Length: 286
Ligand SMILES: NC(=O)c1ccc[n+]([C@@H]2O[C@H](COP(=O)([O-])OP(=O)(O)OC[C@H]3O[C@@H](n4cnc5c(N)ncnc54)[C@H](O)[C@@H]3O)[C@@H](O)[C@H]2O)c1
Image 1 (spheres, rainbow, N blue to C red):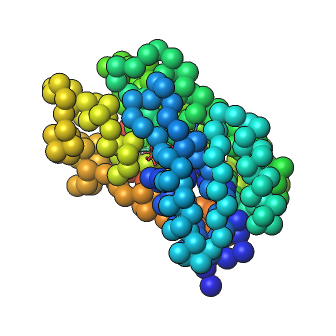
Image 2: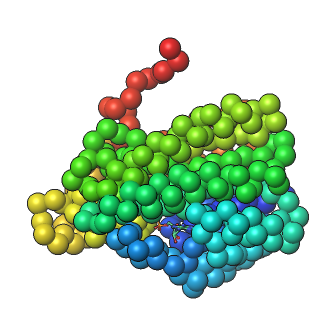
């Protein structure tokens, strides 16, 4: 018996990285998957996004877990693409119980000012679009999980002026995700639909291993390599790791998606090896 047996999960940004890991992990716990991704680049983003081949590989890996996987190319900035892709997946698989709004970009460095708007469009508006398109298919017991970012929540994190307009947009968007989750959790609680956020620290994906990110961690070098940046990646986390793995985030997502968490809602769940501790209070109810 898997803890997600009989459930159907929608995951955006599922072609690679954390989204692919969420798809495989939720499938391993018994869920069928609707996997969406843009599968093309966004001009102002300083590194390449996933490809159609990446999305097909996610499908193959989910099917290896003996679960069904419906894939669609869809841009989370486009509500009609989301509505069509979700309707197709729901028609094929027979329902929707879990929504993982994970797709994101992080256009750091020397990028056009429009990167601010693009980051907000994908990382915040895209989350709202995903939830809005999925909501008509959800009912009591459903679980919505949105991906934020610990670094983006911290003052002087990704909003550091040295990180450019894209970093400022990323921070604005991820803080908006945290607020959106908080407010939506209260709004949907009477329907017994839960809404939570996961906030990763550095995570071992293509987003972290990008030129712009290496420069954030090694501003002293003109063109830092992965090796140059690797030592500096330890800086954020009090625990002695440079990053967490995608499956570490997926394990949190699987818990929040499952009935084990049936009374957990409105949580800002940090999977961050302690990064947020020095920046937060133990409690904040007042
Ligand atoms: N990697 C990190 O260090 C880190 C840290 C904190 C938070 N995050 C967040 O985790 C999430 C997953 O990122 P990742 O680390 O797996 O990076 P990634 O770049 O490997 O994966 C992001 C995925 O989202 C897809 N995507 C981007 N724009 C899209 C759009 N408009 N519509 C649909 N799909 C789109 C990409 O094609 C890609 O497959 C993001 O929201 C990111 O902001 C990442």
